[in-house]
Image (tube, rainbow, N blue to C red; front, side, top):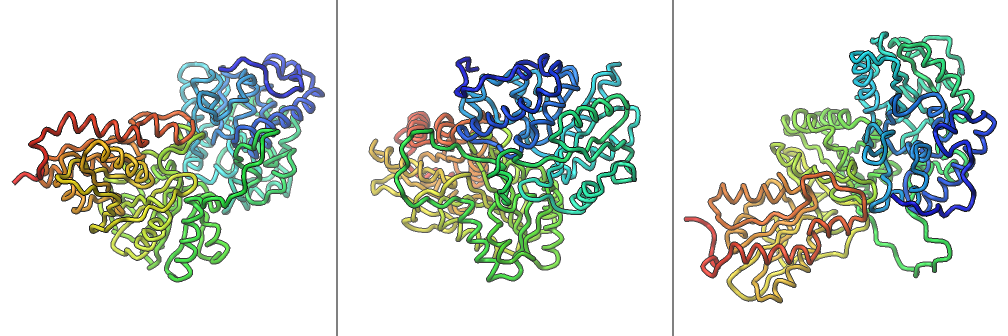
Length: 612
């Protein structure tokens, strides 16, 4: 951890220099401390990038939590951990905050390796209530029921199915005191949708906790609604909740982006997440046309296709803008459905739409898609329904870290019967593959692409079935086949040129539909002495493994060198650096291919590897 001074000149208020100081500080010292924290957040997150809006909204709430509860003896679990920045500041990590989300620095989410105050490393929504249920059961069994269990969950995360399962279990257990702090700002990324949002709006409007409501019907004591920016009011409610010794919902109303006018006025997402701003005094970047993002290319292509195909509908799990559905939502608002943070419901609802003759497009971040594996498998694939899944942020995502790298999807969904998976390498292939997916009525399809801007177009020299050939050397025999999946085709092309300079005959192939493995790819492998697959998904069980199995089934003995991400959780850091560390850049691919060739390929191997 860093020990050098912070770059902010204002001294740290005495009331927040330690948790002990915070708990003993007079209440009148809390408002200036909250203002100081907001100033720091705006400055720091502006430098590093990160989740600004959610944390500006929980400053007073976080102060109150740490004044009432003694962490880590009392357990505080933050649902969707991007609202835990203030918690980090208050629990001894102020001096490291300048390195938030930087390689080797603080995580943008709770992290057990950083602090004993970070109990749960969750950044997937709707899990905190289940954690709290288990913690409270364990406290009771251990005779430690005086140790409080607190779950802090936003109204957006409360739309998720797991949250409702947690409410169902917690409300019925009057002998297990769990305090649910409902941080209600009316939003996930966008305004919270559905009947729950309407109910919370009614509670906010009435401002009266005396009557029955959803939570009291489920067995909770309900306290609220409270002004979440009044630390004293929230603190008093939390003390009361603890003293009740039963399940309690403390409903606090906050403003996402509070104290930062651009965030408060941003109707899109209240500056939910921001990128780093240029350093003060740095020269302005040269004006140039920005390359389109993968998300933007997909969004435009989908809106165009939906206008031409009346059967196309789209579903979002509370992320219409981040997944590129906003253009279609503006153009065809009745055909885009936001179901809240509920991936399982999204997929099963898509199955119903497909059964009724529609072609649903379910757009989800790759890291969240695994939450709905059962629905993809048993509700969509079992019925051979035409549902297209579009996975944004596939592969290495960068500063969001281990919970957000979309590295599992190819291995997880590659086993689903009838699933066709494509990995476009550039904008033209993304548009073409989306059109092909929407025209496929025989079963589910899946497209995956990474975070960031699309690379330069990589036109194919020629097409071989579902395989684009990007490079072939003239010399024979064929030594090395490089199979570049998706955007890693560019690195494979560069590596192929480097291998050619070593005197090897090289073919660079870019599968358009990678799963099921095209027969043409097996034939190509049979015609080369060595095949090297390169993918930005986990290597174990990935597309390279599927090709190796397909070659074995076809009695092709060509050695398959599978390059991909290791089977471990990767840290946060720049995408290019993490890919380089995994050997997935030009130099790493070249070195791996040369080692594999020297190991497996003697001169007699320079022939067809198909066993007769």
